[in-house]
Length: 88
Image (cartoon, rainbow, N blue to C red; front, side, top):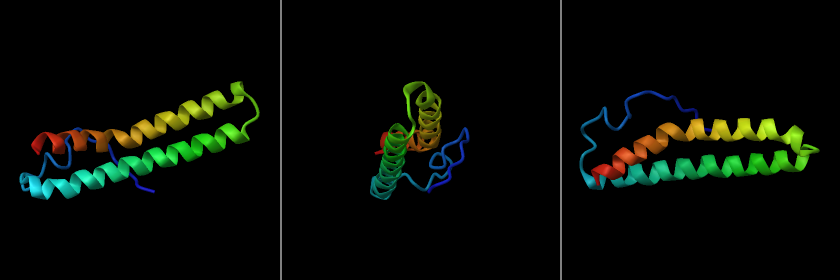
């Protein structure tokens, strides 16, 4: 599991040495892989909750919290990916 912190400055914006497209490509691929892992984990957990909890009114809150956690985990990586793609 990856632990991410949210801040106002992208970690790639702060480092000017990542300006060459050949250096950015591995970073873009890495961020895309991280996002896919987050999404895959979300799908597995959502399916597990959907199968385990008995009815819809009991499922609603855990599913909303799970989705919010997923979006929070993705936020900084999506922002960093947009910055990197903008530099290619």
